[in-house]
Image (cartoon, rainbow, N blue to C red; front, side, top):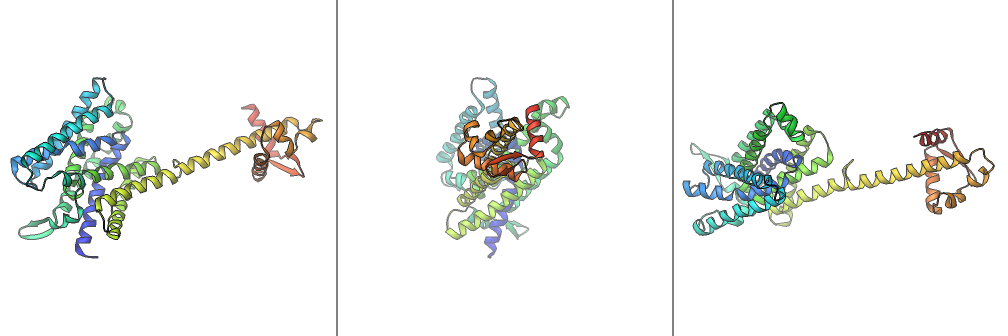
Length: 369
């Protein structure tokens, strides 16, 4: 592995980790699309700060972008509070307007600098190692790596310091306010964090991958656990894993790194959606199938118990008779009998069905309940 390859992956790791942390709370607060709005709407802040400093690496760009991100949230909430439009519509109104202002400013006054819309949207991780940070004349590595490392530490510090408050405000904002935790201040603090993270990752990976890395890993992890600490840890692991896998996918097919990473993020989510232990589609279908079998087995025990010891037992408690009495077809009736036998609820003697003690208990409980 060459040094540029290593540096690209290190940048991808810190970007993925930095994006995953605020992404967890965006997903839990059902504000995932706010990351998309912020990642686009901060563009005017970057452009205006560039006009002031004439330096694409000036820290003022990050500060201005963060302020624009908070302004985006404020505008969305002001429009939403009018109750004339839904929140998603308010987001759809605000961020295209702000993003368009940024695009117009770039097209009119910054067309000759590396601040074009393609770079903003798509980024180019492969070029990130060429922008070096030098301290005292010494090369200390890619600038994007150090910028995102600082932002990652900022995110870790904010979440660690306000973990309890964030957790309470996320799941019960009313209780958080009653306990004096200022959920509004936490909300805007979190949005500022999202803005800083988005603008920090802009030049390296572009806004599309920022959104993918903020929402994808957290949404995937949310399908795998319902504990916040595990959710945060899983989001970090999944985000970093997706970033590394996306890089090597791009390397293998000689294609866009950001596009490959976003594709892997989507693929990971689909895998979790299908095979998550409790919430996955396969698990839900299996659980419904088992519920259907258990219900049918319970119906069978009730039917057998109802006719046990009666003159009709010989006729009613035959497998063939289930088709008439319970309106089951032959295949389903045979399947339920086998299922019930495996669970020790019934036993068969030829075509005759008999309840076991466990079957009688189940039938009795079902009738009582």
